[in-house]
Length: 313
Image (cartoon, rainbow, N blue to C red; front, side, top):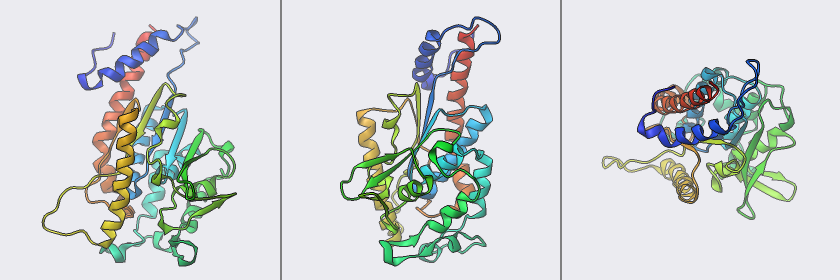
């Protein structure tokens, strides 16, 4: 028998002990009991969403493949690449290659050698400051997958209908327009037309869309990268901070309301101190700060795997 888990992990462990006991015991050594289905939800949060890579590294390390991924905004981008078959390390390498912020001049950061500035071109004529098309085409160049039905892992991308305000979940057809719509931060990236809909960033309506999987998956893991704010009496926020952090405040409010109504089985919230919406050049700092939460995920998944193995004895 495995040792008793720590108190903080007992509710989740108890849930999966019950699931494990309900699973059929294999009739032969060649057979194996099915593990609980796992849904992975990657939330919206700009550059802070690079913390998703640290969570995917844990899945790769433990050789666990999610049964379904749902992503909003940056979560949709990283979820798309992972569902297409790229490893967490390969995704890290891609973002490491394009780690410069397109708003360095506005945020006061020094420029980098990187090409993200070249991939995001100014586009004031289509309802946005920047055109994300070049960046997404660059990412698409790392996989031959272009449709949802070609993915290795089922993926749902969340965006928002500008006219109705409703959350829109897309899981079929062409990937590129869905991803482009999911990251269309109002005022920053251009909205995307889809039939009669005008689609904008999914974070405006459902920044952590774990509700889409709760009725279908045994275990739903939701990764909240909406960030937080801390008082700084020595400085006042500048205009870019006010704009981007106000968007974060809205997302955090939506997530709080969702959590009060119904929670995922495992809620994770990696923090990245001082990271703004487009600080992709701080990728290694973001990943380093995400390590404690990645450790928590590793512990929880290890417990689940041990309970399942024990139930099969």
